[in-house]
Image 1 (tube, rainbow, N blue to C red):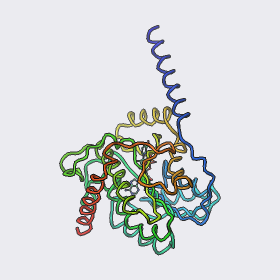
Image 2: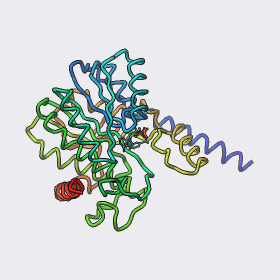
Image 3: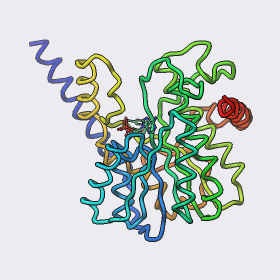
Image 4: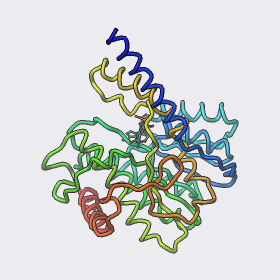
Length: 317
Ligand SMILES: NC(=O)c1ccc[n+]([C@@H]2O[C@H](COP(=O)([O-])OP(=O)(O)OC[C@H]3O[C@@H](n4cnc5c(N)ncnc54)[C@H](OP(=O)(O)O)[C@@H]3O)[C@@H](O)[C@H]2O)c1
């Protein structure tokens, strides 16, 4: 009887939490169209990126999904075209684990596009282990931070010439569990998958803050966001199949759908009310307060300089 009561209580608690998630989840209400706009979405072949790409294609944008796997990217492109009726959807190869790939992607983008209105740094990964990229950086740090940093820098001329334009950085609430250590930016002193993910998301927030200052007056805005929690391929690197299944089931039941988790990215890409907002952190289509370190301008500026050094050292390898 006691066990039964505990079970019923637990299920009720879950249902209340689910209802809370549904009621507080921010939805992009803007009906703004995107005709004539060019949008790049990294990782647009899966999860939140795919949903974001579909929405922006529906609004008439030219959508370029930047994907590390061309077959997966082409399949996603076909799905977006089929579901939205917008044929101006393209897939270009981009592997954030390779600076060469990033440079080739931007060189190609500059050849094919005269403008870039929205860059969404959406791609990200967790649980990549403790290996180094061909550029000599920690794999997780490069995919989630150094890669998007370089990509954004290389895209700036196109973004500036297309102003008003927007940069959107998909961060995570996990940034709150990061440890700021300038001696360990590349995870050479100590690491864990958890720390790599949290730190890379903190650095994305700090990059957003510093870049917003550097872009002041240029007409290019940059904001970061936590999309919410959704059951996506993000958790594919959990090796134990049972744990992976449980995580996906719990997240799928308790939290957002990928459609819901894409709403804040879409909001930042299309909504007229955020056109002059920059350097901020959003969640549920609202401005939210990120961690205290994320708001530290001195740390943001120092991190920017250290990141540039790490990237230029890698480029000389
Ligand atoms: N899902 C959540 O609960 C959650 C919560 C907070 C933040 N986020 C953030 O939301 C963003 C989207 O994640 P998601 O949940 O939609 O996961 P997802 O379904 O796994 O999508 C991640 C995308 O990133 C791409 N990617 C991974 N490594 C890459 C690389 N080296 N180069 C280029 N692209 C790469 C993936 O490509 P492949 O398909 O080829 O692997 C995929 O398209 C991520 O930045 C994630 O950190 C997610």
